[in-house]
Figure 1: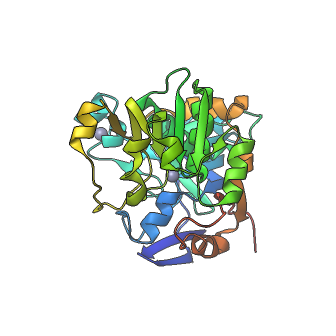
Figure 2: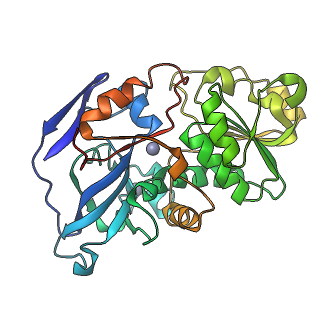
Length: 334
Ligand SMILES: [Zn+2]
Ligand SMILES: [Zn+2]
């Protein structure tokens, strides 16, 4: 079957790989849609550790076409989204439910074959059924939305919060909607690209230019969705005294930022990180299914596997692209 392989940093190919076979506890999915994620791009460019060579794609929705001996035959024909983290289940982190820190973690779209392929075999414990009213493309947003819910869970959104989000890419636009549905009174959002701010406005956000004059100490919760160290380093000035800051965007592993410890002390600022997801896929699917989080407006392109190289080339320009979410559709042919 056809699959994308990231061979080395900066090099990818579309190749024929052996057909995956469902093990006893696995379901073979025909991939309907797989989202291209910022972390795929970082990994491809060598800016984030990745297990080269590998088949990427961790935001996957597909239809069950075969199953191993321990799986329920009634699953065949149903659609599922993939929880990309396959936990070992018995390390210290797994035992306390922090599967994102599993010491023997396997990841679909990492060291396990991902969804930028025609088919993928997935352990049944990593599958969540897609509600009837959602398209597979919409359902493929369950994984990034789950990461967003995990992030907001780390820092907390309180009723009435004034929230600032920097970055109106797909994650920023999911954070925006999740913050509103969690009770934020007003969500401001900043980006360099006017078209993205237009989408943000349509989804309930208020465009913000990050001017220090008008934004200093103005927000209860400030969230980075850029992964740009120069932006992250300036976020404390936007948080009110006693405010909270969430580092969501993925900065380069060796980046450092200036932080004034006195500022954190005197103004009682709380800073939180968040990595990946834990068990938020179900709530994410429900938020998409209820319409509280709208994902269809975030799809800016659909590509066959042949189109991935082109899609990646849009992202080499420092966040100035108007592309929000590219959806890989392996059944499309160029
Ligand atoms: Zn992702
Ligand atoms: Zn574990």
